[in-house]
Image (cartoon, rainbow, N blue to C red; front, side):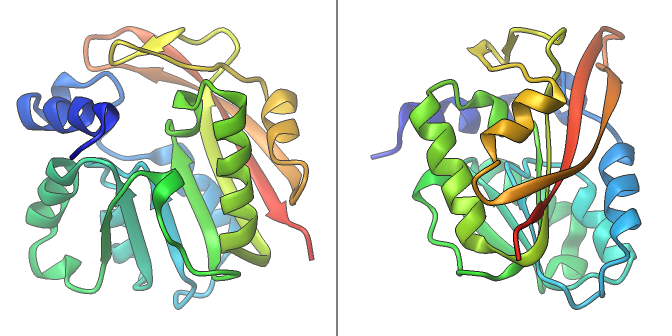
Length: 207
């Protein structure tokens, strides 16, 4: 039996085209800028949680990365990305799962990327579980790049409540296992032209 959250996102991705969703961007330019700055070895294992139909994987593959895991609650979202990539996505690890229920390898990922998943965890206990999973799964010295709605961003997304963060508040959520490296702010323009303020934070896993 699927969860209410899974049913919600499956419905969204089954009924709406990509440009009909507020989070759509043709390229995740801010994420790519941060990832490029790390100068990671192209064999480094990466995970994109809440990947949806994002084109981040297209750009990572074009940069030569091959050990890529995409995780999302919606099978429809990942199926759309798989169809878009065709044979290019043959080596991508496709994971349909809720993040907090996912079994991920320990001390493995060189980079954990999250654009707009963490802010859906409105329960503090769930955010602690998320942070603990990231600590367990990201290798020592690896990085966590997380983007959420900023303190002055929207209070809801896709009809659901979210938590908003400035960089300091976001860093505090991960302080047990990560050190904040730097942050940035992005003003995302939705397909309908409305602005959405995002906080981006890069953190490094403690050695």
